[in-house]
Length: 234
Length: 234
DNA sequence: TCAAGCTAAATTGTCGACAACCGACAATCC
DNA sequence: GGATTGTCGGTTGTCGACAATTTAGCTTGA
Image (cartoon, each protein chain N blue to C red):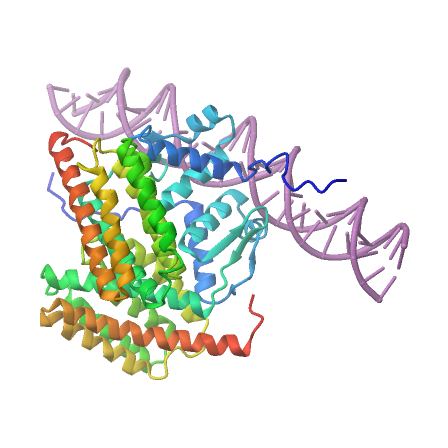
């Protein structure tokens, strides 16, 4: 038989139902189809998807551990409500992790290995900003930062970052216009690259302090405005 | 009716089976009855405890999210194996969080509110060190640090710290003698208190850099030795 | 002897059903 | 009328059983 290198079929995604459902729910929350405070009843989801409650329940517990859902005993799951203070805490923790991760990347000389990918991601962001694909842009933005955290080599940094990232994506999706000038935001990532290339740990830290600080102020600010307009959110 | 301010009954602790089982399992792991790599079969635990597999499964998933267990698809749960590098990452993340938490406590002038409790906890530690109650001492030690993180006011700091703390407790329990001089370790916490009282953020950061740095070196060192002696741990 | 294939036991993934529980409304009593 | 108590629908917590998957032991063949 001729050695056929390209396969006819992809192995069909056959991970547990709970995983698929978890992805579904995550998408629904991140995209805003499910809003903060909404009830997520096991039986309802199970009926819609056509499975029993067990995998739905498991998926919900998974999202609970990532912070997208909260559960009250004997009352079920709800999409987590977020207030401005929460988001502020979120960004503060993110900053702690990311600045040290960046410092480690510089210290251990791992910048060269990722610089090309980082640059490519910035270009992607710029392209998306021009097409007003904001949700997508935020996704790539987080990928950019994730890559830095990942190459720090500290697995716990990455795990913690991933948890935060899903929440950041969820709450930025709740804001109509996240940034006034998306293109500028995208290009600002070049400053981070410059700092990484400088080879100075503290410069890398400072770059992220600034970058994440700006994002923090912007997003938290938007949220405070949102809260002022709509006082009964919970 | 006379306004009865003090209540007659406390609300009885009535948490779900899964929670009780989660506690059981946590204790078993932290105390070393379950060792890294050990299988945790749902059916076995369920039979022993006398409940169905559902709550056991849920408890296991809970511990998975805290990092005490790992699960492989269709193969079940196992007590997480930890190597020296893991623990190093653990302490690095812990340091990131705790130093900024301490800085915030100082910046926002919340030291006075907790200083008495911190002192009391140190005395507890000293007492336990004299009675060679090392496991207990580590528990109070973590409580001390937790109190600082808690009063930072950043809820995510606390959540992240709690996750790390359970793992720290688990892996310190695996080492026969954690510290050479437990009494000294206990009293060293006074240095942290001094730094907090100084009112200088950076001094607080430095104190924790030092304190956690020492712990990190000690524990990681012990673990590397353990690995050298016992190469096939996984 | 050893590798590959097969079989059986054990374990997880999923299911449908029942019991316990919560929240809200209706009924009752003072 | 106001507050307490009883009831009801709906949801979660738990259960035992079945299907799918993995693992280990056994057999077979070279």
